[in-house]
Image: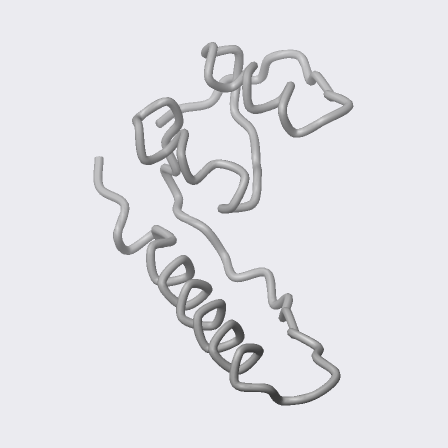
Length: 94
């Protein structure tokens, strides 16, 4: 995909940048969680895939109760499933 040397636009919020990219006004760079649905439904493409950010998330809790353990186990599984769905440059075709 060739990208020309057009004018540079800066937007005050990711939402505006993503809408401009969706409208064909240029390209944008955004974190996977911000574009998940747009990519899934074909509104945007991730031609070069995504890079890991290196950020980590921690669930803090006062005491280990059965309910908090169930919740933390569930959220950890959801996070892994979400991470595994991120396209990388090796999984992008076309």
